[in-house]
Length: 161
Image 1 (cartoon, rainbow, N blue to C red):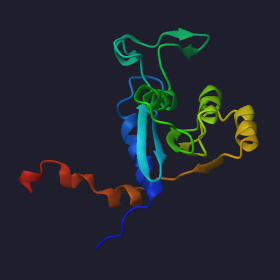
Image 2 (cartoon, helix red, strand yellow):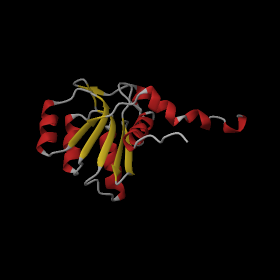
Image 3 (spheres, one colour):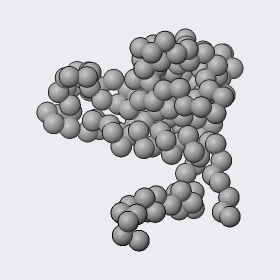
Image 4 (cartoon, rainbow, N blue to C red):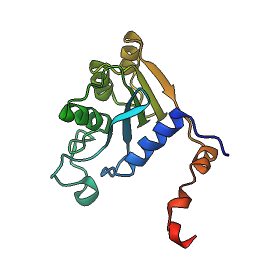
């Protein structure tokens, strides 16, 4: 029997899968909120439901930032709010280091841990706030060995194997 992937890898792969739903041309980001080893919400970066998508009409830029896109972390937090789920005490698994605004929102909701794959314009003030609030920060590495262990090929046309 092959060994199972660990929890960090499992949840980070979920975040990466959510990123594949992104409608942003500039960067695909996915986020998963987890408490007690259970996913409580997920999100990816994209437009407000019903609005045009950047992948269809291009980015709507102001001062170098796309104002159409809601960040993955915010979408996950908003999903919690919409369905009445507290994010207090939860961990987040996000493909990219959160921006300052997302970091502040995560801290206000009581996030205790941020796990990410890629550094992305890591803000010094965000780092200061994370230290102030004693929030654990971990960079998770997904390597080819981990992805091979997942072996998703078995689900592609299973009746033809």
